[in-house]
Image (cartoon, rainbow, N blue to C red; front, side, top):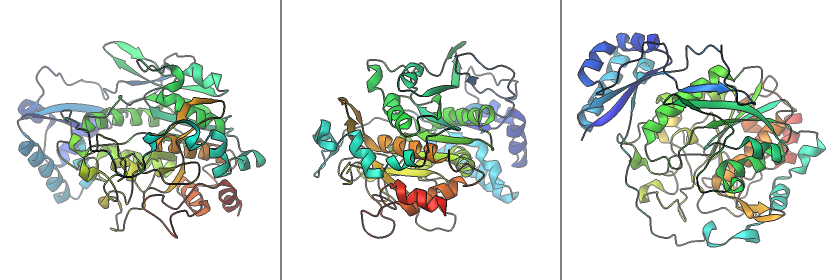
Length: 459
């Protein structure tokens, strides 16, 4: 069966240069493996993402010559694809430039998802409503009032929500400020950020709306940007990876500034590693372009990821048996040491059995040590105080709580005073241990607790 692959770099010249270093020519590769009907663009970038301001107007005149250049190939079978991957890597090592091998990625065919057997332990989905607590309970658990006491409200912080898209109208209804975001141009039309469309779902029940309720509650004066990257389900990992690479490069080029506070919330992850034709090419490879990009962003800005919902007792039903539980459920960028990965507990502190368990991908620590992901945990599966139909759930809900807290804290300690790594360390140091001393594969360093975290930042 044929398999699609893609060549990728920051721009056309960069791609050609890296290929040349390892003895390949773009035109020759296209002649041998070019996708039928595809004509290579002549511009430096073919990124479909464009910046859009808060009024929905595309921002023109912004330089974008380093926002990505992607070329698809069509290989006759997986064996040939693996061989080409290995050839790239061997030659890159031989010339002393392993980064040159990153020009190659893999694109997949969607995998068939099968339902798993029901879990044998308590699962969040077995009960509904206030049984899991309310937002007031969740705030009390993490000592959220400490933010108000210290006048930490997100002023001067910008939050990018990488999700299915959220509604500008809903942000403003919550009292938040919409800052714009990235739109995507497809078939000559632009899908603008802030539209937040999810078919068949009322506005309040959409995934992005759930995230915004926590973000605006904890950091009400932050500014919120929309990056509508996600499909309803990620069933094609490396096609998604290519689309994400374009998006994150555009985000970096058009919005991110070293002297500004940016929090990047990613409430998504890979559920089934069989969705990779070349298993582990993204999920367990620190040198995959997307992992390299997100690690780089995480060293300069606060990047927050949901740990995932593949915990051993009540995993996502699409997760196969070996993609669940300790050391087998946090994949790809969710396990990078340069991001903050968040597990989920109930409002009484009880661990939610669907929350993915560490350690993270074995190859992600350069010294070979266990990768301590998740970093910490936060409350999820709670409802709004005055509307029990609105629920925050999964590690997505927990990650939004942590992202909102970081956005609020940044109004007191900006990037020049506290680096993203130091902020993550402060959150971990201030956490309350709930699964025994030290790091734990279920709950990380423990439960987010703001009084101790703020005290640590003040010293």
